[in-house]
Length: 89
Image 1: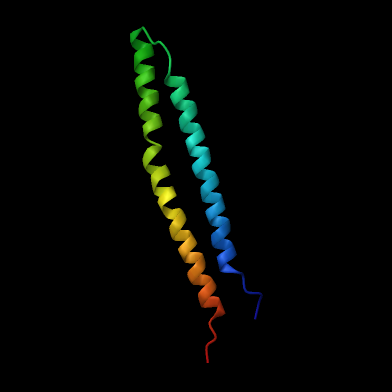
Image 2 (image 1 turned 180 degrees about the vertical axis):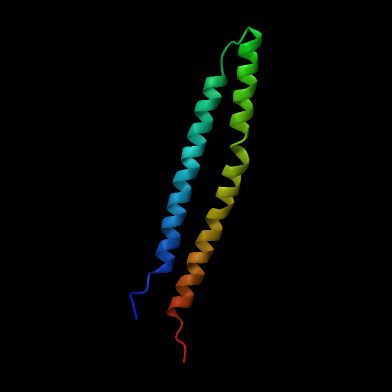
């Protein structure tokens, strides 16, 4: 039989990657908000500001969903560790 991959380590790597993605999305959102900030006095500038704010708001739900997954991944890693220590037969 081939080498068994430690699945809990895979889950921990996934958690790390997910955390990194969350930070990246939050950084992008802040950059977009920064681009929208300013004194937009003309109509096109105001439309630009409104559009950028809407785009920044679109990141809120995905970030929340990803953050909610983090504790679930911890629990999954614990279950996998417990299962891997179980002896059958």
